[in-house]
Length: 304
Ligand SMILES: O=C(O)CCC(=O)C(=O)O
Ligand SMILES: [Fe+2]
Image 1 (spheres, rainbow, N blue to C red):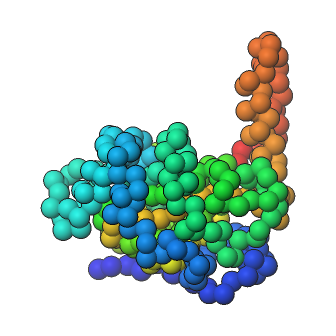
Image 2: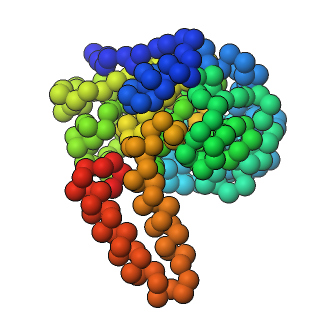
């Protein structure tokens, strides 16, 4: 029997003001159904269209986690996708997932350059005053965003349960195909101590239903044109239901500074300390920062 968890709220016509008030500051997920209205990408970005743009590129494929499993020409990967649709694939093999993101070095830059005119900032996101990336005005189509990527996946592909790094929020913009997403609020995270070792398991299985009977799990199915807002620290697991193209990127906004700042200071200072020269300075500074992190943990601040 298929179990339905409570559905994530769906909204249309959401202004940036209402988004900040009702969702960003409350850290409440939402699916916005009309925030990609002006994107030429909608109806245009199919796997075959992207293959025509960058088919010769070598891409890194991953599995349910974010670890690389193999590399191949993008065109060859796209040619594989219909086989997953029809189920004509060897059993027991992990479904390959292309998370074309900035960790792959130059790939995304080339890709984003090609498709720049086809998309825009989701209409409910504020135009200015971002903390992450570290700019006040943030045009996602021209500035590099952390974890920005275009994801191409076949039916059956999974992104296993995780929270995005650095406390940042994400927008998952569904351009082509469908995805089923499960979200778990940060206060439920202790129920999932095995994030690293956990293998994805259908959320409607009787076992999970029993194991997480008390957990608050929210779900939604994204259709082309939907944008899912995933607030920072929310756990999420995503199943591709049909060959899919999504665009995703992460951000933090100044209106959530109180939550974000203590950790951001620690994160940036630690990165800087690791580069300190001469090296003898590193140890005392890192020690100082470890004390700060201990204080953060004692005060139960997020991220520490
Ligand atoms: O779409 C997916 O498979 C995963 C998306 C995700 O984890 C994100 O946007 O942060
Ligand atoms: Fe994520």
